[in-house]
Length: 322
Ligand code: ACO
Image 1 (cartoon, rainbow, N blue to C red):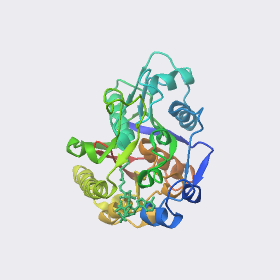
Image 2: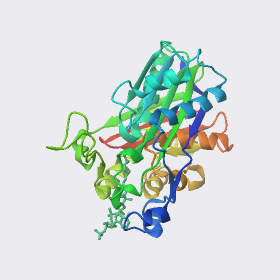
Image 3: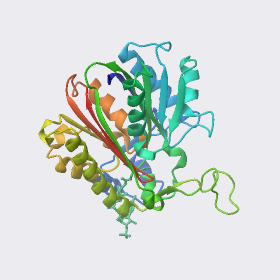
Image 4: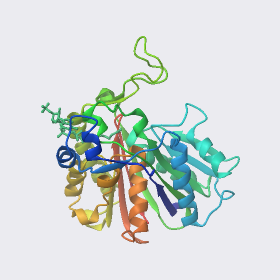
């Protein structure tokens, strides 16, 4: 048995922060941000919007698209780096908000690769027959851990959520998933504090911000994504020309172009949302997927390659027949 994507959804909060808004916050320019990253604007959650609120909206859209209700969902997994609370986990909060009872609900922390990790786990539950209707979410309020005085990171991130419903199928939907991590790079992309690690004398959340050695992350990201794409093609005996759409993590236009080049794919076959949403971490792949399904670019039966790379480092891919 396989799992297949029965429906998708996404949600972005209303508030928009443009590059010119950022020019007023830090020493940067619209030109620098666009040319170095490809980003023009990003959506930010309001103070009263938590990660679970974004996740719930994306989930409702995915459930409607799949034609399923709360009673059908029997598995919930959320990829997130920015949970509402330490516990209950975001999955439980989403479960409660959607009126779902009793099924497993949990979150996975793998930074920007969180959705690919979550999808891989849910796929295993569905294709082994242990779940019949899985809700898989990537949701983030990265703005909450962004240091708005650090121009090297604050121009990159945005908030949002994406969700998919996985159901059993006789034919391959999720064909294969590939997960990787290498903690030797942990210090290149990290938060400055956490729950059990605090800088000496710091109050909780003080200094709880993203720090990134952008240039070094960039180099490892390009190499790792190129190799996971090769691995995915090889594992399935596929020629790169058979991929209809690349749905990459939206961290940086130049990283995306390097991966597309390795696949020999023109940019018209790459789903890009970076310009309007920035890097929404674990939400970026499911958001891009839903956007391209809803605007009619991605059609049933097409072959999709999803990939992501993030803090840890973690990275991964999923080959999907939509
Ligand atoms: N505005 C203006 N100048 C800036 C800004 C800014 N916002 N930020 C940095 N600069 C300056 C730097 O200070 C530096 O100046 P210097 O040469 O005088 O020292 C110069 O611009 C170049 O800085 P670099 O860091 O070398 O710029 P780069 O071309 O590498 O682009 C970027 C930076 C966009 C961050 C890029 O390195 C990148 O995208 N890295 C990978 C990001 C990524 O994939 N992250 C993983 C996922 S995120 C997650 O997991 C949460």
